[in-house]
Length: 524
Image 1 (cartoon, rainbow, N blue to C red):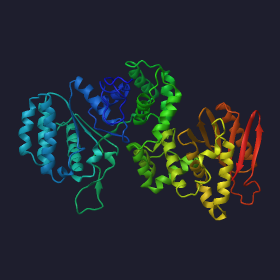
Image 2: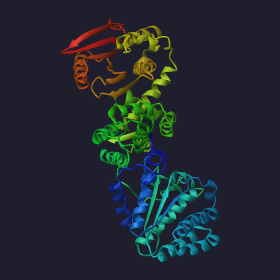
Image 3: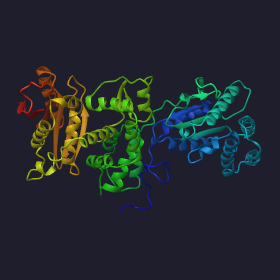
Image 4: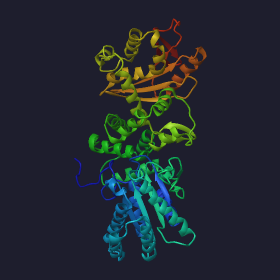
């Protein structure tokens, strides 16, 4: 039974130490505080649900312990009307500052309250900021979260331009202003362009090119995930191999904070192991998560649906193993990184994490499934043994029949591109609710796709590859044998997509022995 008074894993919004299990973020906080101490203006740009707001909150706590005065603002939830004019924006901004002073009983609270009524222009606001920062007796830091909410408004960009001008004057000893300004959001505000005058449609300038990027990686490292699990264990009578569990969580998520927290929350609140967390619990939680309709996955799919070029690049990466260099000068790659679709893997472009890969596989396969008539062929009951195991040979043979009867010569181009997705779509209803499939593109001359299916207590290794000749085929069989060794399996399955329409292999099946391993193959 769960103790209702204990902390919980948080997967929505701000994480608070006394309410939620927390990862130790001390190293990243120290790096951010060093930038503040140096008087830097900087941006924190990461995808949604990446822990930006929590890090700002924790930094605010630490800075205030160090004697700084921190204004933490967000225009999220504030009407866009305030950006209609300086007369509306400036008093609203001052009201936000005054509220912070009021909470701390700071003597300058009264001064700010007086300024709200009379300060209605950015020029006047600049003078107030000068007086405020010169008289406060403390170094003042300004944090603005969810800056994307405001960045579409020209007035807000002009406001940033004013802060930029004051920063430059401060460094010359000619003005007083905030010690540090931190902007947090999905997009990099430095890349936004400020129109100088309404009539100059083509002339632009950056309002924030004095800011540095926070260079740290905000994803959770394996050690930080271990610290999260340690926090959980301090008030729960549960055992686990922390290093093993943290390693598997990182393997699936690449440290994406929302995904790590969500998996832990599912294990803790839905699976509820009585005595011990184990790796099977993580697999079960991943299966549950991949079927959820949450805002994180919605955002992922929306970005693919709204950008055909991004969709095509992701398709080539996850289905065909195409190698692309990581280069943020490429606008398409930069967009994918901004929204958390891609990550840098030693200079190569990768889908950010394995859970995203799985969700993308499922999404793309579903699109193919709804355009194909396969329901008569892949009814799950056709493939069950008497003992409840899955007859994978029959699955492959039935898929072979489906392609033979439903697709013709004229569909060759479609099959070349979507053949692998067709099999994934074919497989989904067969294992749905009873099994789990995990895919991995192997980078080789055959660009093969390996699928590991768990169904009940059994595991099935299926490889999908295109035909690239006898030599490549022989190498591929040995690679599959090695993969079976690593998975501790004696039987493997192979689907070969053969574009040689004259080949007498198409429609055939064969069982071969490679060393101690047996491989069942079908040609389609």
